[in-house]
Length: 357
Image 1: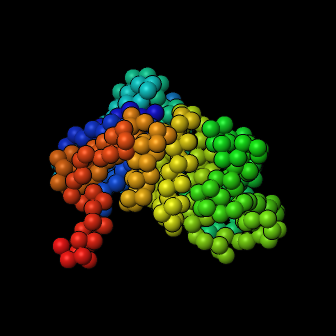
Image 2: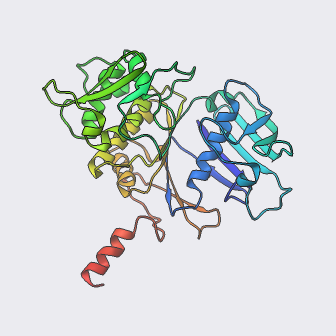
Image 3: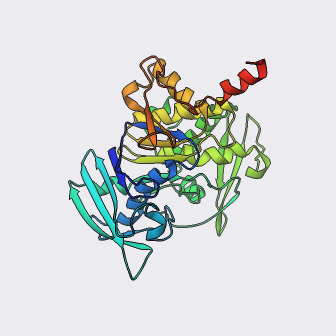
């Protein structure tokens, strides 16, 4: 679990900026103010560590994120000679990296590190589901799963996971959706899709022809199977999030961008309930979202005591704040005392104009 992060001269963060995190962390706010940049500071370290306990270079372009060159990552208002500083504090220690430009290869940052404790393992267990994940896709090329099993940044390993790991047992906290059924990944995937999308008896099928995995869905009590392109896009967009939550192990980190994509407001709320169960099971979650339904779902869970206020952090990114963001506290009853301008206030602004205020 990441307890805190400090960034300096990293993209939009010129001055040293520190974040403090909890189990579930919602990043929201104005476009282009640093939400994705912060997440990239985690992904950058994760893809550079890979299988190694220590490392001497940071790779800007890898499996998780492609950031270009050192100059693309360095803050534009700082001197070329100023290094990029990234520090992550976890439960197991502190990792501080100072990046300087490699004159030979501008896509690699020369690194000096200060590692206090064994924290590299935590960064090897990051599930990242990007905003540009694949939509409806019927065929998935057969492939060997990596040592750390994840759905892939765009959901590209989804078909292989659902086939090769279909009998894997999920966290018992996620069994509550149907205590009488099997706790296997294949079964729970369909049951949680049914709950999230408010659809009766969803089942996901994986066929295994010679060179690919084929995904189809069925609904209700009939035997008809539907290809992903012939059902709502929401099923395909939420499926990798559900599978990532079901396969995540205690100590893992899940990063999800725009989980609300193609989802009805009720489905968004149900999805947050699912992710809250994943978090209670020991997984740290970072959500980047522009949806007030995501925020309100977290508030409701705090009010109902499914979550405590000590488990949830909200970060509102905006240009008016000194640190580029403002922390928003959700109180015990789900209340929010600090409500800055542009923080999910457009609905109120529009309504005032409609009624003539």
